[in-house]
Length: 172
Image (cartoon, rainbow, N blue to C red; front, side, top):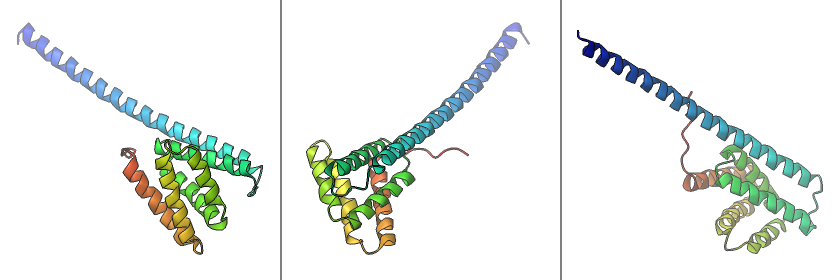
């Protein structure tokens, strides 16, 4: 073999080694991206939970418009986080079941929430449509919490599938 042949083989091996390093770097970047997303979800959940606990410590004051406003503001924030993919589906379903229970048990809850949403009409039509569906499911199933929760979970899951980009499952 000539020197040129050895140099060609060495160049091919170096290129192959570089390819392996690049692939490993890509795998690392993908994993870091997943970990960043997971950390963002945890931080978002913790933030929403803290806001909920702060708000809840003041009530419930079902007759107080400010108390309701605090709740509707929190739920609007949660919806926007969910829409952006910053909240996991299972958490948001759980929270929407709690909202459905409030709608079913308190006749004034939906009109109050609807009034809050109307304040921002035009910019929150998607949100208003979403919550109107939660209210209709809750109201139509107010005597049966299990059925209500299942229907809310189905609706939220279908809404999520229709309105968010697919996220690849975590590699095992």
